[in-house]
Length: 185
Image 1 (tube, one colour):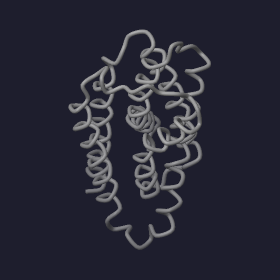
Image 2 (tube, rainbow, N blue to C red):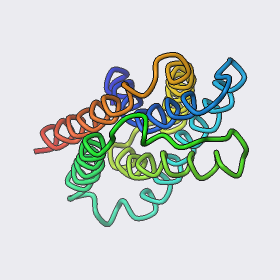
Image 3 (spheres, rainbow, N blue to C red):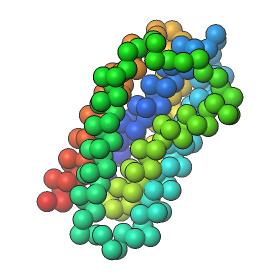
Image 4 (cartoon, rainbow, N blue to C red):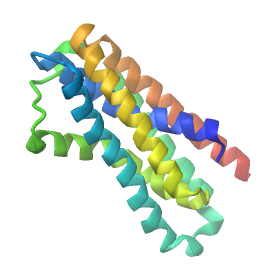
C-alpha cells in the first residue's frame, strides 16, 4: 500500500471520530487545547489499536482464504463506506449532538464505537500484507490530529461539518475497496 493510499485510508477512518469530536466541541463549555488533546488521544489510540487487532486476527487464518482475500477486503470497505454514507444523510446537525463529557466512562465507549470500522480495515490490511506497525501508528496520528481539529471546529463553528465528514469518509472507504478489488482482478 502506497503512502498516498494509506493517508487516504487514515482520513476515511478518522471521519467518524471527527464527527463525534465536532459534537464534543459543541457540547463543551470550553473547547480548548486540553479538551482537544484529550479527545484526540482517545480516538487516535483506538483507531491505531483496532486495526492492529484485526490484522493479527486475520493473519491467523489468512492462508485459508488467500484466494478470496481481495473480495473480503472489498466487501468490508464497501459495507463500512455505505454505512457511513447512509448515516451522513440521517444526521440532522446540531440536534444529533448530545451533551458529552471527557470522562473515561463517556470517552471509552465513544472511542470503541468510532473505531469498530478500523478493526475490519485491519483485516483488509492483513490480506494486503501491509507493514502494520507504521500503518497503525500513522492512522492513529492522523486520527489524533483530525479529532483535535474536530473539537475546535465544533467549539467555534458548529455541527455543519458532521454529516459532510461522514459522507466523505464513506466515499473514501468505498473507493479504496474498489481500488483493492481492481488491483487483484
